[in-house]
Amino acid sequence: MPDLKVIAALDGSALSEASLRYIPLLRALGNLDVMLVGIVETYRESEGLRGAEAHIQRELNLLEAYLDKTVADLGAKLGATVRKKIRTGVPADEIVEIAREEEADLLVLTTHGRSGIGRWAIGSVADKVLHTSDRNILVIGPQAAGRDTVPPFRQIMVPLDGSGLAEGALPVALTWAAAFAARLHLVRVVPLPIVSGETIALGPDLFDAMREAAEGYLSELKERIGVPDAVTAVPVGPIAEQLGVYEQENAIDLAIMTSHGRGGLLRSVLGSVTDRMLHGPAPVLVVRARA
Image 1 (cartoon, one colour):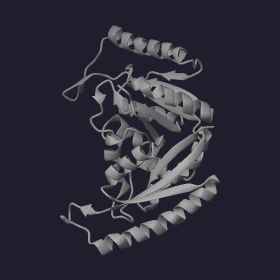
Image 2 (tube, rainbow, N blue to C red):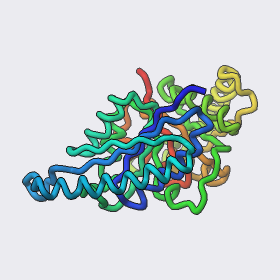
Image 3 (cartoon, rainbow, N blue to C red):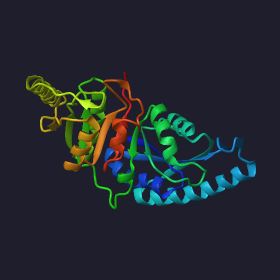
Image 4 (cartoon, helix red, strand yellow):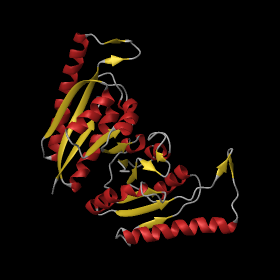
């Protein structure tokens, strides 16, 4: 199997380390080449000045000791060599740059963490990394990070909106579903139009037509991608809320979605539908859409 280059960013906090629990699962995708990245932030806006050289060196020493132990522990679990890389600078920028330099296939991030070694919290940089990196990113939200056990990916949901950009997640979803012997759930929410905070009542004919169109789209799509046994669903209501309900009711283990949708680049990858998904029980694999 081909190597899968994985980079996980750590800030020294227990919450950021939760991402490491998911890495052994990724062996189903191929031989893993894993690198753990730590950044010592050399500038804090609140201070208005660069950290003293001696202080930075002390944090570098602490970070190196921490990563050495973490690398050894993860390597023992994987039965493979795990590398590390430490840098100083702006954490989000350095993580994105390292992923580019290493030609990583996948970044693994948690969205929440507490300030640890290096004086930065992983959650404070996740949004910027999601906006600026051109790599696929497996994002571990707080519920997923807090699970007592990490389940295998057996139920994979792909939210769709009928656009080609949203369908950009499908090739990755097909690969992951095959690797994990997972059931694929293709979900298209029919949103109710809202004006000035009020839901507009739709006539029964129009409502039925919208739902039938969505059902027809999903039926055609699963045949087009060659997965006739994929589950299809057309919930009705607010998009994020309905996706969350579906995720809970169907024990979804992983959501796979693009960073783009019908409206183009999302207003904030951590700020709209994806934000709600990240607060659900399952990790979210954010796939870089190609225009």
